Image (cartoon, rainbow, N blue to C red; front, side, top):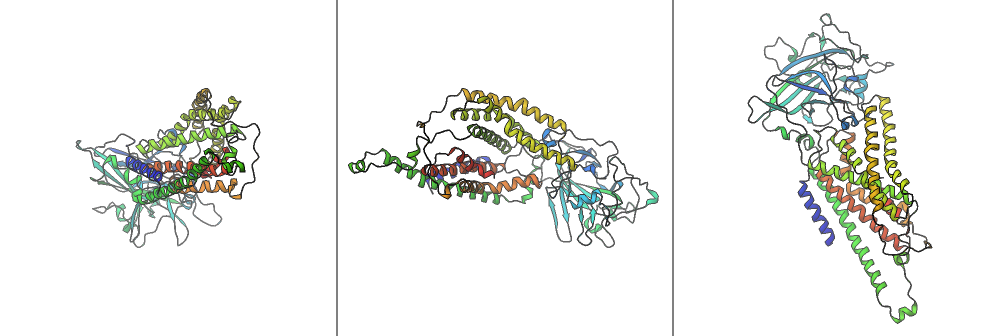
Length: 607
């Protein structure tokens, strides 16, 4: 391994040590302490599906609604963009007060599953694999599942609306939930407690309703309908108030002989248990740890192997640059600078390689404005990514601050408009561009306009599907104000300083007549260089990219920003080295059109 490779590895190892690899966690809200008997609010959020990828509001389905009006929580910009819709619920919780088979309501879910009949909303949600996401004290619900042999708890994706039976292929709704809430006594404050864990175990129980003692007039298509509670015939043990010592609902009760699951149709009674447990091991400040680590579902070893894989790529590229580039360059320089012998003078030694194109190497490329705008936008995105990762690694952007990550990305992108303007102006000036007003306006509008058009198109599709991903008009207006009110002025401010800066003095003068470029071998063509230039950097970051995409589309938690920061730096180094290597090979083949080639070589990583 070369000296440069060792130094790079040592620097990255030191960075990982300083960042503790995993990001620090700073609690996102102030702790809320409760006294015994105090009400604890349970909120419902959007229902999500990794199958349809279109979240929907909880009350779009004919579930039980609060007796009072539905109230939506005050949400920030990031929550709206993420599709969150946090609302109150009819579930009543009181600190340290257990409840046994508490009834919520009886509601009509719609017609049953029959051939030729359109499935009701709940059946469609179950077949779409939708999950509920409930919140207690700003803590997302984990989901417990058990069978005859195994009991497991999952800390992501919430709990399922229901399930599809393998026997008859029909949908069954989870109409009962055990709300298991752990609390921790507040140190130094007697009689005060804090919520540190929230787990939901869903069940499907076909309660027999005594219709003669219940008024059930609920329309499944009426979103504002309020349902009445009912009397249960032949209840399970937890729902039988005549038993002296009631027990909480368990898997054994639900699956005992004669008990059937509840079909997702017709009149359905919704019930819940509340189970409070004292937990002395988990403190309020560390209650999110099990969520962020996903209960060790993805061991840190996977990320370490990703780092090792990335370091191997960096070391290989560094060795290639040292052995090929520096050695050949040193030989060429020695050959060109030494005093020629009489024999060499007699043979009229000809120049070859990159020396032949020294008068053309800094010739402005085709479409210099487009290249300048692309580089400026890339610098803006690079700066945005860097500061977002830094603040996430420090701990300011964590899942307890819902929407904070999206808000930070938007804010940094807007603020980094000054970087965009400066880079675009400086490069365009060095490429002898004259239309600086048009270049500045283009870099301020080009990429944001493209992103906004894609965003607006997807927003229309989400609105047609009735998804919470559809951004309201007011939020859209805020985005436009941020764009025109903050981003564009900063772009023009950065461009002002960029144009005022002195032009970079190139070491050689450019000739007036362009040199003819000889035919190039196939492996120096654009497709091959883009493919190789994209594969190697992508190979250094694909593992972390997978987990990031899983957090976006599969509702996973991603909070290993220490690893991500290291991989981000390795990606930048890899892109720089592969671009440097291919540019040198290109110049050695007397092809001086390297401006766009160097941009596309590293940029192909995104493809």
